[in-house]
Image 1 (tube, rainbow, N blue to C red):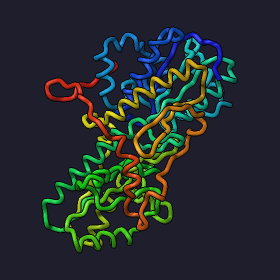
Image 2 (cartoon, rainbow, N blue to C red):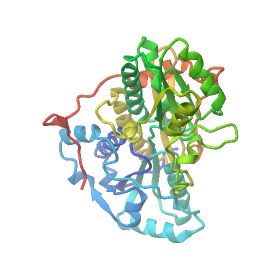
Image 3 (cartoon, rainbow, N blue to C red):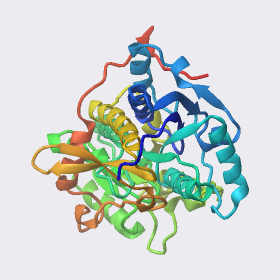
Image 4 (cartoon, rainbow, N blue to C red):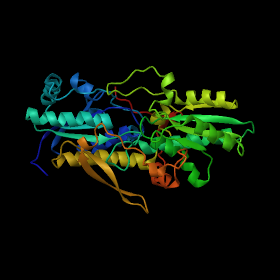
Length: 411
């Protein structure tokens, strides 16, 4: 429902894990905000909600001056405004919220745009709820991002397409490298994905085009069975000496225990999530013990989300557009919502942008449907790959200086 015109200033924050497209969304929000007379000043909050709490705020009008500035920002990976993983308390604990709203009122903030994932939408939902308690008219808008592609309610998330392109390309290159030898060997590639296997599934997109890629894929959506894993390798080794395996960092055994638990510190973030790593190394040692062949593990780690040299044009264009749409939604009177992509055709790639409540997304996970996982739970179907493939299409002309990418930095 459209409410009366609301005039004031806007603030934008970035939170959660960075992506190669999150700054494109930031650019889209600023570009659209500049078009509306209702929005006077445009601020950036350094390190998400922490920047509001500490008044670490920058003037985006003084930072982005030219079209080249915007383009350079759009091609820069990581979060230009910095990020945080700050879990807000219940709205019943008013002290934190009173401090936040004192700052918002001081700067006459009437529009808040928080670019983030599942946990960030928890922040938007709580701020939106408290704005009603505080009786302060303000539009709180969540803007989606995550390489994990695990936000419910949306066909996909900005940042996923570029990460998927990097993973698909890198795993294919690894498979090409492994294929030059005839000595039996297993290479295990660990890919990000705590609870959802979208990114790991994308590793085998090159299979659609007859290219080398992983032979087996194991996702968090199905229990990991060590015996079946070894049987899979032994059976394939009868026909192929060099085997490449793609595994999600968050795969669990039949008892619900992370495969990589033995190598982890046990430390959790503010949202209770364990820091995951070491799954590939555990499986490397297991294969070495059970089979005895040459084996290595490769953890793709941060490059999956910070590699800006393999940007998907589809991803960057959509990231900009969803940022713009977030502003339009706010200007039209909505609050406590986020824009999402809805696919409108299965015969050709088409999407439209709609708005849904942040409460429908916050702290929830969109899993890979098990219909896209094969019967042995060691690979994914071509049907799933055809759904993901359009998201990695197109290339971006990356700004460079002296042969290396030129990154836009906000001091």
